[in-house]
Amino acid sequence: MGYLPKISTNISVPTISKPIQENKTINHIDSALISHCHRGIPVLTDRKKTIKCFCPPNYFGSQCQWQNQRISLTLQLHCPSTIYTNVVFQLLIIIIDQDGQILPYHEQITYIPNRDCNTKFNIYLLYPDRPKSLSNNYSIRIDLYEKTILNYWTSWFISIPFQFLPVNRISTQLIIPEIQNNDLCTLSCGEYGKCRRYINNKSSFFCQCDQGYSGSQCQIKSQCNCSNDSFCFHPSICICPLNKFGFYCHLTHSVCQSLNNSCQHNGLCIPTDDWINLRAFTCFCSDDYSGERCQNKNNQIDIHLDETIISNNHFICILRQKFSCLKI
Image 1 (cartoon, helix red, strand yellow):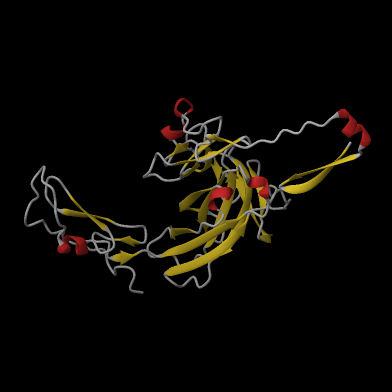
Image 2 (image 1 turned 60 degrees about the horizontal axis):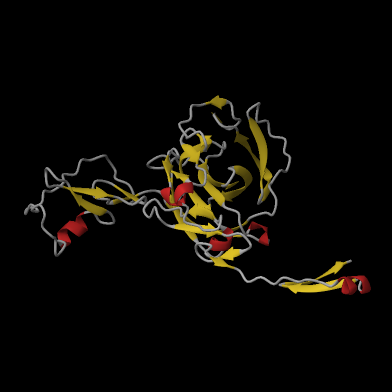
């Protein structure tokens, strides 16, 4: 299809004709160096003065010259209710085959409704084989967890049309339900699994396995290397708690540590889901405070009612964002 090499070949990597001197500022970048890695980033090794290419997920090869077969997915989530004002969700996006087996490549997104309601997330999902198996019928499964307590919330099923194509582009909107999805289903999941329905496809089921178990019916006991305070979804997939990150959730966001909490007045500090900028964060403030760091005290109106007013009236109406009446 023009996206994969016909045979595996070793491509020689040219050396740099003019070695770069140490402690010298580079004022310009050689155009030949940029074009060598195509869509990737060229890196000069220290000893041999040769070029190595760091490829993006959608390309591979010694010069990033081949396209990976993949799914380009654009997601936007909506919360129909205001009850999610101070809730943090974690999305787990995986590829499954026709038997419901979980494939190793996955992506995770931290979603905060009052911050990310208009955000469109663009991700790549790579197929497990190169080239991909045309005999398998792949689909996308998205699980949602409440990140503060790592509690399962719901799941979506997304089919992949035109599976013969090397690259599929899918765009979808997901609506987060107000309550956790606990619909009963009859799929046998053994002793270490629970049957779950997809929120957007009631006729489809899957087995949600307990920690340490995997397989289409949770029949495989596996060893997990995730940290003790994380959720081991799969031997190769860990869902980290609020202040942890990394492949196995062993790394800690120092910006939100209790001794260095960047949010004032007991605000909840949430690290930004970014492995590059480790000092970015969002504050969830209590009702009495606001601002980026919960540093501003909100205006407050205290109402004191005289006893004679209370005794002569049966209803008191107060206007606070919306009109409401209290019976006395």
